[in-house]
Image (cartoon, rainbow, N blue to C red):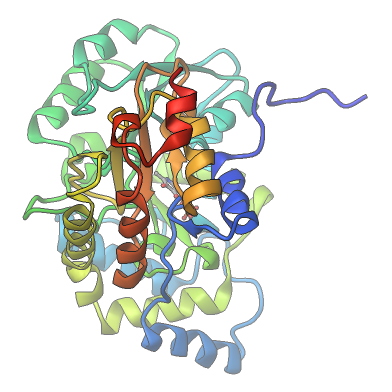
Length: 396
Ligand SMILES: Cc1ncc(COP(=O)(O)O)c(C=O)c1O
């Protein structure tokens, strides 16, 4: 008989809500992907490379041209000089990089700290390696980190801290103080860092992304992971990368070779060309999404949702306690069925779901999609408002 290696874990909420959106003909603002394609010039380069013989296995660590472009990018953006030959690996999405990084450092019984609400791939990867996940909840409603709690949670078994900045699902971004506190809590300890920075280019309001690559002392113990899927509106291509110092990268590649060996070849050549030809794309991405965030927030201003400020990513949290006291999984399901808008309940990203009424919308959508969604959501009123009859039932 098969014994479940991930007891208590069902199908990821992203698949569940996307399927529900499809079943009910709802607009899908749940899973984090755009409803538009990436730049035509980039797609043209994929077709070009497919037509010019780049269809066999890529090298284990990735196509050299792409690794060089990644090195150029992190030098330009973060002043970080990496060796493209041995400090970067291209992976099938950030997801595989996260699994490999966790597998690289976590042995049976090791402890790993994550911050809830936590992206749902972290804990299963720790569990599959025999590790133990320690959850620290971010403070509601600003979702800041309680650094004293981090200090108190670290012990001699702590091997890894998993950080996510800009943060999915909350949209928080790190401050200089967070960096300083991080430095202090890990000082003198044999702890590695996994910095999930897949939304590195989507930071708003003139803030700068504080990549751990900016800080040589932190980069020296970090796996810094990003996703071309998020940056180039191409999540289905499954291309991401990991940067780490040589000894960590050697071990990472030892594992990566037996999981996926290598990553899509024509996509890698195309991304290398595009990074070289159009670096402005990633420089302009923050403004591109800020416009969508601002539009969505303006459209939702007359709704009864209370929007929690988003400083980065393409997600917007919304508190619906003025509308209903249903738990968020029920509320999100009803929103999909009855109002034809799918969102993500955020309690599923917690070990101990707090008493919150918050769901996540993905605003990486055409402006017309956002307008249509807002129109539907504005029609949702509190029980007293009269139009949301089911909410009345649920709150009885
Ligand atoms: C925080 C975070 N990390 C990692 C990933 C996975 O990225 P990829 O699609 O490149 O595997 C996602 C995707 O939604 C994410 O939001």
